[in-house]
Every structure is written in C-alpha cells, then in structure tokens.
Image (cartoon, rainbow, N blue to C red; front, side):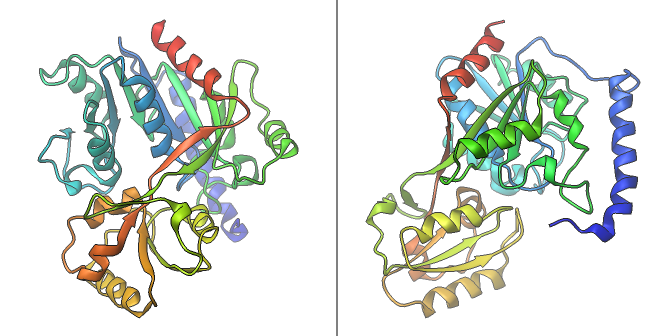
Length: 350
C-alpha cells in the first residue's frame, strides 16, 4: 500500500537521495576499496527481504575453505563503535541478527560497526582476525563509503521495487534506478504458487542491464527447535489440531504464518514491529495467551526473535517447555544455485 498523500514528501526525499548518489558517482564523496574480497548484501526497501538467510547462505558456501567475516552495523544494539563477537558477547552488545549468526557459525568472525570502512580495517589488521580472507557486508547496499567488489541486491517478490514508492509514501530507501549498482539481483521469498509467467513478468519489470544476473529464491523451513532443550519437532509431525501461538517481531511474518497454517488449523498470532525489544508486559501477555490455548499447544518464534527471548526473565514453565524457533534457509529456483555459487567463487578467485 502506497500512502499517496505523502508523495510530496517522498519527492523531496528523492531529491536528497539522488543528490547523495550523484556525489558518490562524481567522486565528491569517496568510496573506499580494499585489498580483500568484499561482498555486500542489501536491499533498496525498508523491512525484511531475506537478508539474514542469504548472508547465512554465503557463510555456508564460503566458510568451509576460507576464513570469512561478516560485518553488520548491529541495528538497535546497546554498544558503540567496533565490536567483535566472542563467547561471552551478549545480544544487546551486537544486535539480534549478528548474535544469531555468531552462535550458528563458530568458524566465522562476526563484527559490528556503523563505520563499515573502519570495521573492515579492524578485521584485516587486528591480531585476532587478520587472517580473514573474505568480508561479507550485511545490509550495506546504501553504505557507499565502501566500494564492494561484488554487490548483491535482494528484492522481495511480494513487493517489487517497480511497484513501490520512496519513503515515506512507500518503502523504498532510494529510487529504483539504484539497482544499477548491483552485480547480482535476487528476487526473494518467491511463493510456491509462482509459475513461469510470474518469473518472466518480474524479470521484464526489472529490466536489468546485460551485465547483471538475475536469480530467484524461496524460503525453506527446517524442523522446529526447542529454545531451552535439544528437542526437535519436524513440521510434518504437527497435528492439524495443534494450537500454535506465533510470537514474533519481524518485518514480514506473513510467509511464516502461511507455512504454519499448512500444518495446523489453529494458528494464533502475537505480532510486534521488526527488531522489537520484548518487555516484561509482552512476556506476561505471552504467558497468559499460551495458558488460554487448549492442548496440544506450542509457541513458535523465529531465530532472530529467540536471540532476544533467551535472556528474558518471566517466561512461565509451560512456555519454556513448549517454545520453539523455526530456522529458515533459502533455496535458489530455476536451477540457479550452481550459477549463483559459480559467480561468488569466480569473484573471489579473481
């Protein structure tokens, strides 16, 4: 939905963003290159386009043979400056998404710094991390002070940039022509119902340059994993009568809810804004809502939300025994995985 009454403000915002981009293009504002492969992953829209699962895909692809670092700004963290995640690092120090990745990838350096140039310099020069050989920048498409060697742009299939408007009328951070900076474009969150006509329609709308490669991806859900125990619960083992309480603060929960409704007739939601910091009253509401549901019942949240929930006090024993996170991965469609991997490896080898 586009707020048309805000379009005059969007026009003013667009002038400012276009001026900034022209200053970078002209070299008035300087972009810094580095003597190490730097891959930027980002989007043009505000909100969830699948950045974290795509970054994690790159980490799985690269970390087996190389020392990889992921650098994020650490949105909503409580610290300042450069921080390197360690065994004792807490979620408030680095933010929920970096914390999630630091716990999933023990052999990957995870760091945060709003100044990405400084973050890369620290990663490549500090004694603890100077053996890094690849840096992946999370949510850095607009951070033009770094000139990445490879720019990956993610576009939500459910809200293509060609049908959106600039902030504050829509969700675009910059005009859609900003897509020209991308080397690889991935249309994400493609639903199961997508057919060839849908793929071709989006490709025609985007009208990418010949040097740019277009890919399509979908989300895949793993087994539910209990937050406080080692128990796993495959989605296929859910009963249609199971009452599922979805407790989440992410930008786009629609696909998660749709997936769960394929396995249960009884899905209740408690939804919050993206990166919401859960409060004591939120936990009280969760306890009360869960207690009101008939058996069998479970709570389902996301990996990102679970990073913020684990340290919370006040969860009832019932909730602690029955709360699960639902991990996600991405899958490339139309036989795109091999071609995508080849592009990444070719860039690094160069």
